Length: 184
Image 1 (cartoon, rainbow, N blue to C red):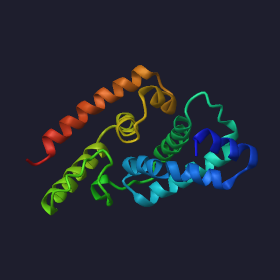
Image 2 (cartoon, rainbow, N blue to C red):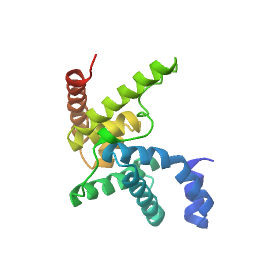
Image 3 (cartoon, rainbow, N blue to C red):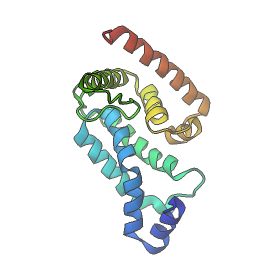
Image 4 (tube, rainbow, N blue to C red):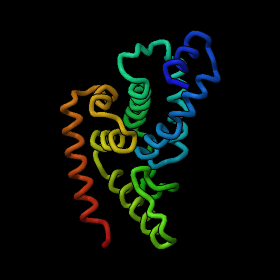
């Protein structure tokens, strides 16, 4: 069902099934955003759940000046930012379990290739974890969540040029970290 129709059903009819469809559509990407940021699956689940609770509570304030996903990620980013400020200890992405980052492409050419891909994904997760927060968030939103620089600017409440700078610096840092640390 079209996103605008789902939102209208939630707003006008308080339709929980329509909201469940929105959650189903965005749950995996939002959880992936938090998992990449925290490296902690349980914390990622908690933050994703809190995001959707806030979306439910605040959907009436969605003015459709930007896309729904931009508005949703703004809520998720604010939760993430609050988490960073609270200085709760976070796990290192070195220990993160689960499937490779969505940006990784599976070769599916036998066990050896799968093991290589998992190892590459682990190195990418570690490299992303070592980046500074603004660059990491921009990289995650741009490459993994496929948000535009304009949307990221709205999500992070910063000028679009700043987002492009964070992306540029983030790519350079990611490349340097990977070149210096990935065994060949």
